Length: 165
Image (spheres, rainbow, N blue to C red):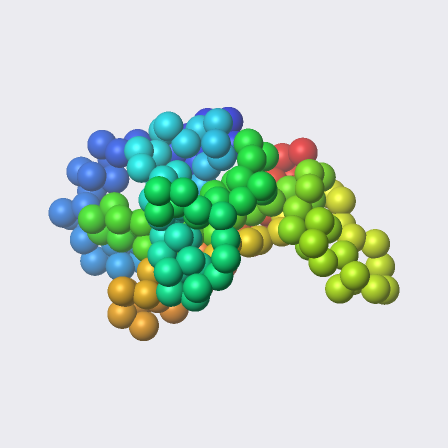
């Protein structure tokens, strides 16, 4: 079901199917949501911010904004779309953030000089993908699958959004 800017999978459905199709959970489950719909996804919003903190602040040592072991920045706004990849225990193991180019985005704000031969995009069908990360405690082969699944999902999401407008 589509709810606002979110794809909602009823938890009773996903939980009841888990024992039957446990092997399919190797593919994981990706949830897409905005701040407006985050309450439909239990801990997804805080879990993705916690994973970002672990990856960008703790592991990579980057000087990102953080509070209470949650990473955030000025682009975590109601217009952002968050993708989270959950494992069979519903733990967030991968995440990505999609920023609409009709709103301020990172390339436009901090690095516009990197694009010399054309205008920066400003379109409802073009998204900037940022804060992509995968939990490093997951086995390398599974990390690659998580990254591929997230990549396919943000391509699919932006493609679908272009036709809904």
